[in-house]
Length: 161
Image 1 (cartoon, rainbow, N blue to C red):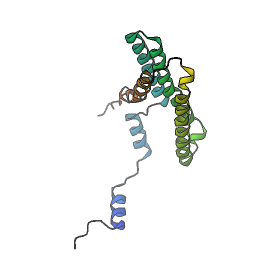
Image 2 (tube, rainbow, N blue to C red):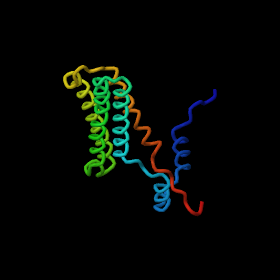
Image 3 (cartoon, rainbow, N blue to C red):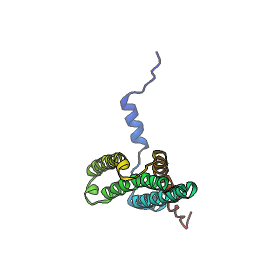
Image 4 (cartoon, one colour):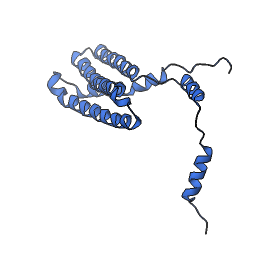
């Protein structure tokens, strides 16, 4: 009979044979070639896109309540994202890898709870709230995080490449 799955020891040996730790110099070069994106850059991008969407909806429809609804949808993304970014960039979240993972999940839960609370409060805060306009502002602003990745600093070319 043919064996479909490999033994655990075979898999572990294959993985160990392929793994090669980086030297300090190789790690520096890798970081220089692939700079990380600041979470604050993502939040700023979301804020700009949210404002543009709100102004576009207001300008295209001529109805102020639609503009405010879209703006509130954008704010319901930007404020929780800013709280999340603040939590991730704080000193406590970077003490060690375990704390960083715990901090990531904790601040993600805070972000989700704050977003839901803001959406629940929307009808009380915005007069003549338009749910479709608010959802357009919310969704477009959420998707704007990808713009920060697209417009991130480009990889630096090494002179000897």
